[in-house]
Image 1 (tube, rainbow, N blue to C red):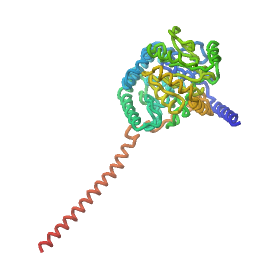
Image 2: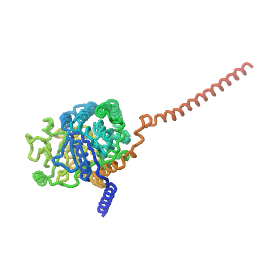
Image 3: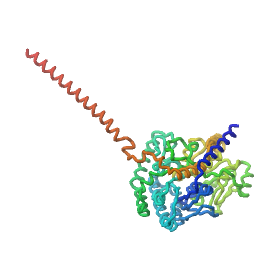
Length: 523
């Protein structure tokens, strides 16, 4: 009964939002600069939902649709995709470099891709056109110079992040991120850190802040100034005046942390709520698995065919020794020594596979979209993180009790087999993830509907009223350092004066007593 009432309430809330958001058709510019499918899919889902509502959408995209869509025009960016591919091919090598080298290379890649996007003929043609836009949706991912598009077209900027809340997007709305319990996305820490972890977190945050403020952002500002010389506001002003930021996270999937009202959680909007029938060969393979199925994918950026031979052999030997069937996303149809219980394809409908009741375990690289899909469908995970936020996501999986994290560099048959057996032989992992799934699904509004609502709301009301005053303060003002100097400095000065006065009084009294004693002795 309670479930039925909840559904009725959700329908009523959504219907109410739809009535409130009856907006005239908008002209929307979407900017999806990065060729990683996990980045593209979030922005594309929002923009396509807006197009279906009758809004006119123009999108700068690395993945043009195979089938045209009404109200949806595309500007392909093939050269930018080629630039990114060089970095994608090198991802597996990041485990052999230290975190400082990786973060520097990471930001350098962002600068190259941003410049490639701005140099695309289609983007240049758009800038020279007479088009107008009511609102822009731009990805937050190492491409700050692209915020100049919003200023160029004088349209409020809504940003979206394929990550959760990190410095790149919290800086845009002023959300605080206390380092005592909010770990950096590049570190494998949960929200309850030890003293040593808090020291490491603070140290890394300090390094990242210095890199961003004194090296990376000035480089992006150079690109901005070169390509948008007529813009009234500079990149820094545009960046801190975003109307809103959508973050790919939800508190039920991570941990509580502070947000500004215009930093909005829409995590999981990419997950299909309606199931699509599986291809016949995959359906048969899963249905006939007596002991269940394990699904294994390293995501869209990392490709299993690029795994070193010793890793590949360890994986194959592990799969050969278990009784479950395995679906492995392997991008080469020729896989030598493949066991009979392993089925390979270069692409799988991951969402629909994880929804199948016979799938018992998801082996993943720990990407945020994959982690969310595993939780939504109630599947525990064995994670093999390689770069970026994958370590944080898997640390959260372990902390929340629905996953096991393995070290890629030390991925042996024994370690891999042990991780798989821990999940399959201990039902607590599945129970934990199903509990999380139930919490996540218990929302009054679907995240995609929430994102569409806010896009229309900001187009109607501009969103300036959501601007946090803290964004207009410098470091000293924001942390009240000047106030503390004046207040506590004044108190300290008063204490010093009191001590000096007491010292003077005592010294004077002592001198008087000494003189009196000396006089009495003479008498």
